[in-house]
Length: 95
Image 1 (cartoon, one colour):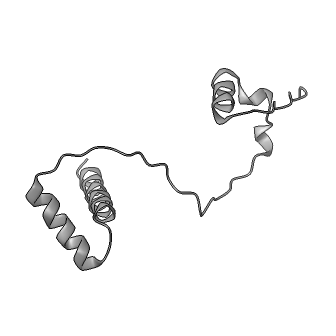
Image 2: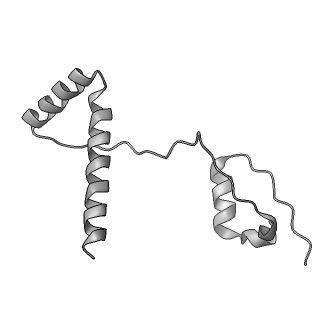
């Protein structure tokens, strides 16, 4: 096996990303020695979006969130996630 190249030091995340977008990692890493790992505290990336809702719908969500004593945005994320999983399960069963 060829000798691996040393991974350079980076001054920023952007510099790091640009490097890996233009270089083959197999020149720097021996992937045959890689081990599977779990990152239990890693939070998924999120993106802020704008969402227009009818005012009565927003008020209902806020009311439900208030009853559950959680922020309404958190409740919306839970509802969206649950509905997406439901749709994916329904669609995969009927294929």
